[in-house]
Amino acid sequence: MRRTALITGGSRGLGLALARHLAADGWNLVVDGRDADALERARREVDAAGRGTVIALAGDIADPVHAAALVNAAAGQGGFELLVNNAGTLGPSPLPHVAWLRTGDLERILRTNVVAPLRLVQAALPHLRAAGGAIVNVTSDAAVEGYEGWGGYGASKAALEQLSRVLAAEETDVRVLWVDPGDMRTQMHQDAFPGEDISDRPMPETRVPGLVRLVDERWPSGRYRVEDLPDRADLEPGEELVAQ
Image (cartoon, rainbow, N blue to C red; front, side, top):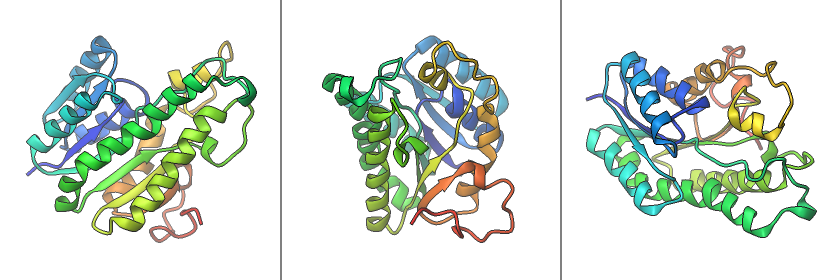
């Protein structure tokens, strides 16, 4: 049976790059995105690159009906063993200082970046437990550093990290990986720095091998930075890379 992965935010950026890689490795995939046209273009691209099936469902991960449809689609493929909570929102751009961050905007950020991933985790857990699978929650250094303007987004990622940390302690049959991919040349990063040249940032494709290594080599639950992985082949799984 082919392995199945559910990747949110799979129409562009890191989600699309990861989907292409896993498809080439023979995984079945379920991907989503809010822009139906962009998602369909991504589906065709990923489908052409792989050997498994690719199901693309357009929608908002904050919608409980859409979330349930994603998990049902992944479970229906069989071998559902990987959930990647990649989709998220930056919030207002330009990024406001905390003093000017509107509470309604913060609520929307938390709903997308924390509540929606939790809903997917809860729905997927029975399948992931049975498969001895993994959850990858994409996080950021903004969760642990105090960058000016990043209060809303950073708070949401800090909350996601703590949920991940506790989940890892509670779910011994599932690996929980909260992974910081580092700066990338993506639309979200451009939105964070409107009008600036971000062409010096690495492409998302450069972050995928390290992320896949965490999954395929069955590294233990914990927090990882992707940029630490490719050049550290001498490390044992988890050594020096898991946040304390």
